Image (cartoon, rainbow, N blue to C red; front, side):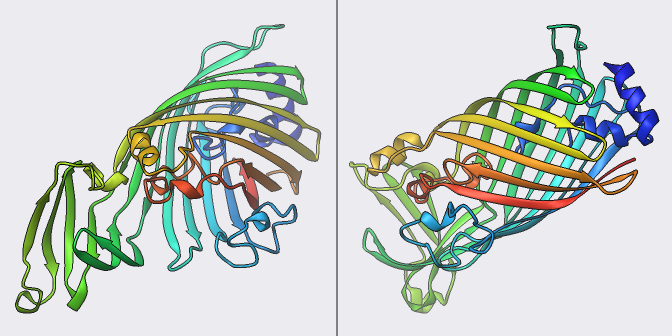
Length: 369
């Protein structure tokens, strides 16, 4: 297949045919459904993608988000963001890529903002010969970091009335390995299948709870039956209680990490169909995910259904504007909203919201170099 890439590069210029052929640009999640085994670029060539990502009532043309019984007709669930991603071929077989995403999701109270990143290396082990696919091995590291998240609340934790909660520096980090196989029907059409496995860690720095009289406590739950707190801010003369350690023989406390810090594993599989000509490219990808988390038992104990899988479909249409630039429009559908894309957003307190459908649109430019 390398001779085919060389032929198309001669027609369209260095690298341009290769990105139409389907290079793997920063495909560690999100967008794993566009994985392909053969990046197609000559050494020290590659591509860069710039995109605007969004969903709101005006863009929800299939009424996916609008079907929500609770938040339809509101701005809750609106998504705005940008991302830049790129990849470069170190050799004919070795490809590296990365991406950086800026994200904002409108919530019922304050918006949730964060950034996502990814780094990956992919090695092509075989080429496509007759019915044997081109096979690549891929290792990626990716995650999401968020700003502090504040929430007003009127709840009672044991004998304390909580007026607000702040979680500082929530984040997640994943290591993922994939095996990718691609079959090229001809110079302009290909099929890809992939399987991957990953490990995930979700963490945060502090959980701060505001009680009466502007007393803010840093809370911890070292075990299922223990709750500790230490005065974080406030006048000690007014707050009086400087620290506490409550113990109980029954499981009345949230448990270690409050169900927001945990580890997990996941696997996924899927595939992509791609076709292109001199001016147009079309891609359609599917991915199934299955998640197993250490927090799942705690979610179930709260009479909340554990959402452990997701179906994701992504389609894309691209149009070549010039020798080195192309325009694209991309649509992604999630059976369970953003599950697996931002793991830190899933915890004991939010799990009940992940059984909703969601969609995301991206528009942008891609260039070869």
